[in-house]
Length: 454
Image (tube, rainbow, N blue to C red; front, side, top):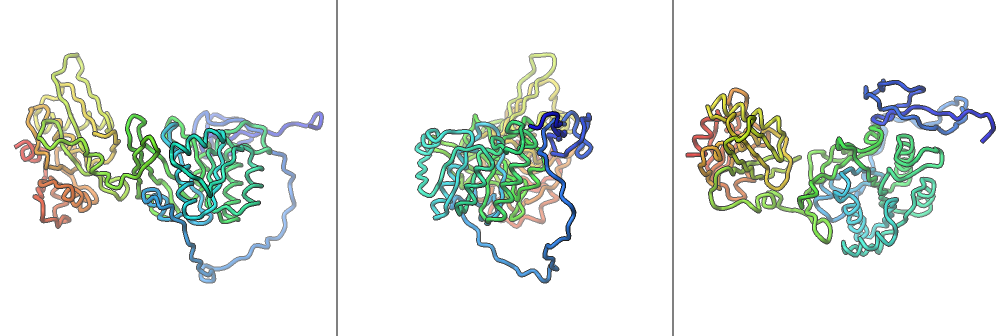
């Protein structure tokens, strides 16, 4: 370094990646507080402005090019990324530590290699021997999968330029470093520079690029938010490590729908597809009627899923009644209990209430309201609900049952799995043409409880 030469630094927002010349409490771009981190920036000489030589065309003059994508053969995986993987497509995969991101990527690499595609798997988190051990466990042959354990951006770029790979997987982007920055791996500047360079190489050479990213405690991909804007597709690998199922969900896709999910089951030999998710989540549902158990139909993406809601109500033994929810929001449970007490005159303030969505699935959509309230009331009065009854509907604050979306798909899935009585909102009655099951239109909560509990 030249003696006396000042090191140029700037402050980057860890949320959006915006650059600031000096520290300030709030980022002016995204409004995040205390998110600015000092980073060293490379010394780039200013070049004079020159005339543009870029070719311009109107949209009408652009000749359409039909891109042929690659299918991995894993239906659940292909569905989420858009049906097929396009040349130059960049995919960002996020997920909690230990959820199975590396397992998914290694199995995806094997799936693409079976289609006779040359695949490069770059890992900065495992050694060659560790990759081999995991490959043996997952039964990954990897004949067309090249594995390299490097973390330097420039080495990766040289490698992809020297060989014509169809698919390149980086596990993970937080471990890659560029020699242009003195900052450690995982910092805002490093992630942005490395991702930008790799995406540029993918677009220019035409290989598909997967970037694995760590997530923060809020469940978002760690690093600058701009990273999600740079890639074509953003998918999250979700699930609970205490349960077997994993869900692959797209939140952004320039080449396909974001209303798609893929379901997998984690086993000793890796991830396997769940082709019948409703049957999977209802595998423990008893054929014998029992109190506190009601099935409902939710929609994840474009896929209807049947889930079992279980409730247990007991007289409170403490000053304040307990409210414990698994799979639904605690505040949502408190709201539903207030509706049940105020509109149906059940003394919920004197009881402890425990509610769980069986299977560990987390549900946020309001169509589950009616099933939750029916299960709670069933447990409170100790009356069984017919195991062939299914309840769908959002419950409003005045006790009315409001309409939901995709009612035809929900009902069709329920009929396919043998449910004979289906409670639906009266507002959706005209949208259902199903004749092989008893469809009961419900306008208010009390009517639904009277029918379900007989």
